[in-house]
Image (cartoon, rainbow, N blue to C red; front, side):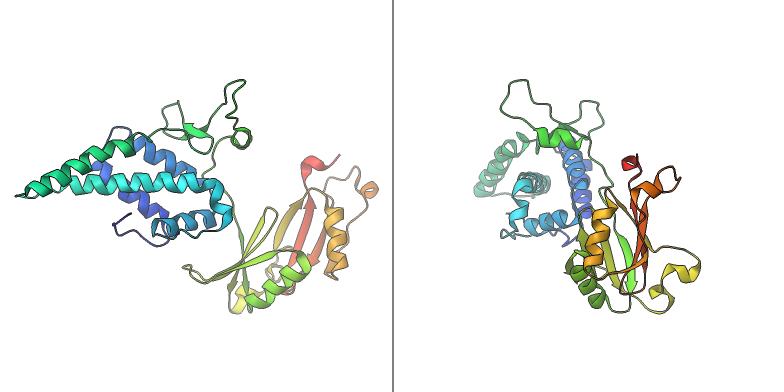
Length: 290
């Protein structure tokens, strides 16, 4: 159980606290490698998964089922934080100690090894890179081994920039969210506990943040000479085009047939209008154009 005063929502500060402990001395030589390893793994997670980790640090054990696969990472971080707190405890040497204090201190010192034995061990199909960069690299399963890590292999290196989301300023974010859910197939999450209260819309690999705006911030970009408010790249725009038409979404520019676009130097695309009059262009992925 942790006793330190950790932030509620900022994982960066948590790692800064660990690094400060390392800088002050007294930790195992592998502790910094372990810290950088876990930091890179967390950098590859969605923001919501990191938020669940913060909840776990503060004692919340009733987390969504979706966290089960990455629970080993949460536990590994707890192991490192417990180790940090013990190092901090041992660094504070009182001027006088009773026999009980001495025994307790020895017990804490002896327990450090139980934490240190996890330092550098592979986790979630990744291990500390052999290049000396202290970053995470996929674990390669030995030929014929049952400990296959195909999932991790397919992901390749961890990306520090994991994903992004467009920000739409709306006069009524709730109204906009309902439209995107009922007409465009998005799912909405209402996140009022963030620094910037917002609604997160997500579908497939697309994320949109809806925030309350005023004045010109809620006007479509074409009012400022910009043709579209957002681009969505789609592997097969024809399927999405028909889906939106079935929900009576207003189509501003029709999707040309495939034959007509042969030989053209522009992507096959169509444009629809959302409830706030934004024009969103759905364009075919370049690599899918023959």
